Amino acid sequence: VYHGVSLAPQQSEGYDVLSFFIEASGFGAVVATPSPADDKLLAFLKTMQTMTAHPLSYYSNTWPFLPQKMVPNPSTPPFQGPSTTMVEIPGAQFNFVVSGIEIEGGD
Image (cartoon, helix red, strand yellow):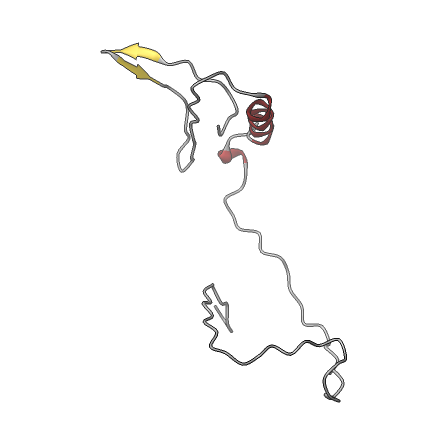
């Protein structure tokens, strides 16, 4: 899948063996189908072949972070009451699950 090419198995000691290149710190995937690939899969493989034309080592392994700057954030107007377009949600017990990576201060 990763390089978007068909693989032909070779027989070795009674087993079908696939051989393909995976570079250091790289990754890959194989799709096995019981019948020839349909047009949708062929289109996907063509896309993957285009996207992986260069090996991973072609690209820099340095993380280029985006520059950031503080911008003014004007205060919002004080609350004047509920909007006519607001919908009341009746009180109930709600379970919220949150996870993520937070970057704070000098992290």
